[in-house]
Image: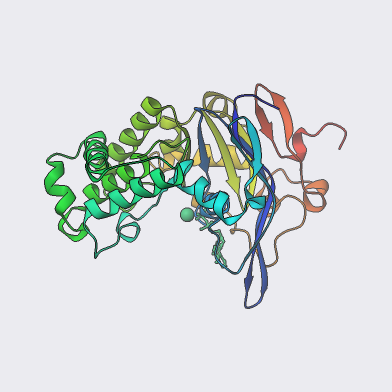
Length: 332
Ligand SMILES: Nc1ncnc2c1ncn2[C@@H]1O[C@H](COP(=O)(O)OP(=O)(O)O)[C@@H](O)[C@H]1O
Ligand SMILES: [Mg+2]
């Protein structure tokens, strides 16, 4: 057990009840996040990134079934998130983790002012920590949070309704809300992708600076390798509800091992740094009837018999680099 560990996900499976049966989306997802570490989770649209984050927060849709272990370290003790009672879960969401969603508009309530919304987050956090507070101390924290995300004229913004602000400002407010109170883990789901590229870049840099100055652990989800490369210490590559490879950022780019990672990297220059897997021939996994063995095998140019029959387990290559691929398994 690593003393610096904050989160450990072990063998997470998630499936959804759909009208044609069960859609088996996440399949044996395992990864860790250390304290202060920045992890990037990358894969094409539909590979299960949002589902993974929602499983961590225990906010999956009601038709979801989830198994596996998610251990979170609080005060030196590992707690299984799925064994927590409602009060413990509430405290976890209000004091430990926070999440930035892809679409800032739907994350803000149109009928409350920005000030009311930020204040309610701050108040809920203080109540959960059983700390005393005054109205003034909450306003002070709200103003400080807006200053942290470089929003000018905080008094005016606190009085504004979300519709009175631009998309970029709304995204900044969502970020302010998620860092207005001290948290140990920040989850960000493709932040800023609904905004234009220059603003998206500013938003990512802003989140990165906040994470570093506050010493938070961070999981950044993106479909773009270029985006996570800039802000992650370590990267996990997802394909069809599985993690196919994980490594320190520099190692992943210097020596990608999994055929999918290699194909993804080969797509980057062609697509102007976007790293979109649509450049790889073949179709996305059908989760109702997923391929046996390795889920990537129907699209893999190097697949052999074992790939069609046996699900590959992670093979450790040293230095925290692991690949789930039969090409690297000794003795198979
Ligand atoms: N509530 C749900 N019911 C059925 N299928 C779902 C549900 N939520 C997500 N999915 C499916 O799970 C798969 C992964 O989705 P998602 O986690 O949103 O991927 P990503 O964030 O990587 O684009 C998709 O095929 C999506 O349609
Ligand atoms: Mg998503």
